[in-house]
Amino acid sequence: MPYTLVSAATLGFDLVRLPGGRAAADVLLTGLAAGPAELTALAAGARSRDADRDQRAVLAVRARRARELAATVPQLRSVTPSAGDRAAVLVTQLERGTIGTVAAVERVLREDVLGPEHRAYAEADPEVRERAAEVLADAVVGEWAAGVLPPLVRRELVTPYATVVPDAAVRGADADLGPATPELSSLLATFSSLDARGRDRWRAAVDEGRPEQRPWATAMHEASWAAHVSGRTRALATAQLLAVRAFAAGGLDARDGASGSWNALAGVVQGVAMGDLLDSSALGVLLAPWHRVTGR
Image (tube, rainbow, N blue to C red; front, side, top):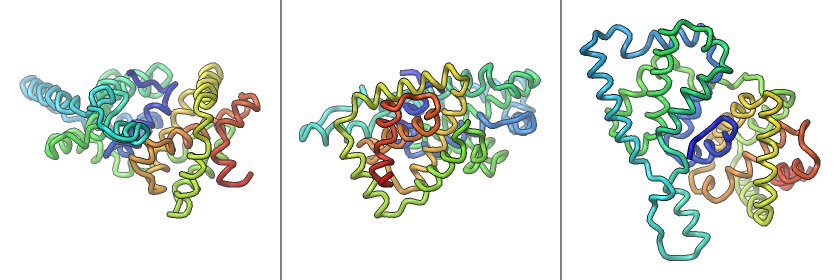
């Protein structure tokens, strides 16, 4: 299944269940927020920058081999079913496999994050574009597949990015998320600081809302469509990637992600971000988990 910025919540679902998912979100956020100076710095850090023809050929072979190794991240369709309670088995399968692939995450980086709507990237020198994309693509592959890549291979992929972007963990934190930026910032800050009691309350709210799964999916689609037609897809995708950060910072793990806690948070983010364009029915479904937790 391909990833897109329109369906960033689906990408987030995979990221919160991968060992390097939070770091991969940081790379994508860096790309979304990069201006001319950041793109120039990224390009200057590319391994191919001062390489001759033979060296570039070697680098290309190593990059291809790294991606072959990264492709071994289990996908849902490749996970072997196990015996037991159906719901428990499903959660276990979701913990082990992704919806998308390493090729999909590289594609969304190169074609959507750095796509035509990225003004600074579109206006950059072609050589800067090529090398900046190389650094970001290698890094997102290395982080997305961190659980299966040999340490030396992963390090080779991510080191150019990490050297240029030492503050990766906060890139995009001050992004314009649209009309609801203050509310989203408050939501994500609260989620990032969850303690054990807060996590338990969130899990309980998620469990209480399980019967609403079908209207939730419809409401998510309506919010994504509203973002698309209003030109706010990139802002909503940024909010969802920041939510990946908040999910991890709040102490929630892959099992939480697999058992509904991520979908609930992604829905709240969609509702807050696009609340000015949604009807009360869709908004009520998306915000329901937060209302249960906060009593509002």
